[in-house]
Length: 276
Image (cartoon, rainbow, N blue to C red; front, side, top):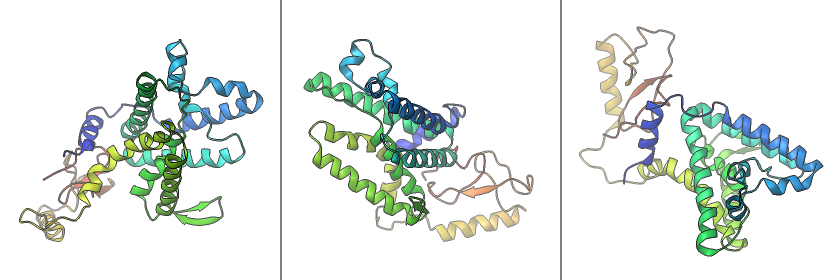
């Protein structure tokens, strides 16, 4: 099975200006604004959530405003806002603006499609917000930075992989406790994580060694020998720039590429991954 991330990486490489920079900042600000307005006028909140029947009657703004529905009516919401912004901004810095925008766009699209499907097929009206979609960022963040430690409630040190397990337990509880079809919303929200990390998860499955299996240590030694003979230490596999020609340029190695490939800081998050 082909890794869907290859298509996403190719699109991002060809469209480096796609998306809205600092998208999570704007979403968080909008969430805070609606939290304040909702505290003053609770009726306003009823106009934000996704409702297929009302959208078909002309309230098309609900296609987008459900992404701005605050996660809580209490002061705890500000802690959630902080985590949303922090994780979203970090993911955008790691992936790049196009890839992070696509991540949220896929989650938005799948949620909207599911909302219409249950209405047209089952005749069920459900009101949807983006709570599970935003919480799914925990899984992506933990997959990239599993051992990073954060201060829960700004006091308790805890690793991201533990927070992701707690988040997973919350999703499972929601699937079990909520009535159908609302209980499937957490599963729909996780699909964008599956799309982005399915290739990584499959590559990490135990495999029988074969003649075509790349020995990372041997490959790295071969690269170092070539580097010594060519008078440079690092060379970008995309643009060809070296640390000899550009002494101040930062270089990194991609763990998702098959083999041992180096990239400059401009292309480490903006390249098509090597597969063989």
